[in-house]
Length: 463
Image (cartoon, rainbow, N blue to C red; front, side, top):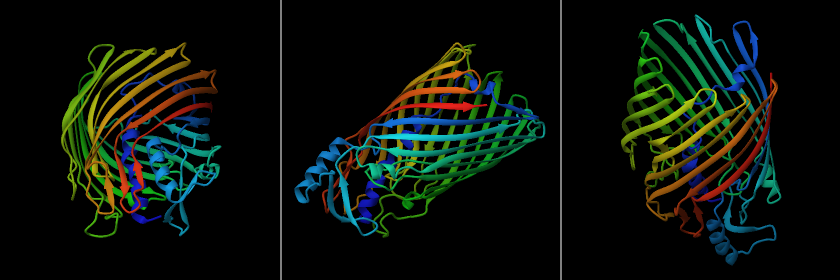
């Protein structure tokens, strides 16, 4: 496939990677995990071995748009015609020098996953506290349409997290931590290639506690992000930060949080020439916030924070403006948690340097008979991107992209006796946008919109 067009196809979804990921962020407060009541006591350590087995049905594995399929099918069908399998020659060659083909369908997929995990810690350690968690992710994909391509999505992923805290009871506490994720994601066009990604974040710091209610955390972190089949998105980020806290009530604190980073891409120019550059500018993002976090009554909790951010990109557009987060929630211990609120933030983006998002969310958790958890949540985000750099070979429907995103989730989990749990759930994602990019030479389009529904069920065995 033509190098310009290949990267254009990748970019359309990568611009949404962080946006959709944020839509499933952890809520501010949750009911205590029922799993914590289980596990194995081994001296000072607590161990949690588990095995998850999941079945998931995805109605739109490759996040295809009907509008895109209809347009490109008419374009290519008139030139080359489609085979009975729904394939058309695009007039280009792929990375291996073979004829590149376009698929006119939206394959659904059945995904089988096995996820063994192990976690341990020693929360009572006086000199050293240690925490480790690791999980494997083994997947198999099955489909009626384009079964060979869908089957090729089956990969092995997983994650490992480690944290060591020295002198947890002292005035000066030191910590080192590391997180490694190998995450699996399909492309936004029907292809054997994937968005398989490896992220490693390492950090170290010191926590100073001059008084019981006061603390100051100073930290430094290094993040390395590598895509197995998409080197243009590989990047490195250094980040230094501080967090100051004053706990003026037992469950309420005021805080200040500030950070500065330096982010650079391995491939500084996507198209390989100094004159043409779609993205990949280095940046020095600065973020600073201050606010209040905790309970204002026995059952009502809030997070109120405001501040300033500047992405400070070395070229192209930069974000500079306010940051904000306002959440309010209500809790009945061991029975109910409900929360909702608003957030304004920005993130680095391979397309147009950055995206700024304004989001509102509502989430709730209900526990019945101390063995059944019902969870449901919805999040809407309005996302604005920076102004894209004009490239002669690629046309955009609009210079400044904007999207509307909606994510709705609901699930029920049941814990039987000590050793067995069952989880059933559904998730709906909808990216609403008129944005598309087009290869000027072939008139081939890539649309940013899509919707998908996922239904899943898993069984977990634990000790």
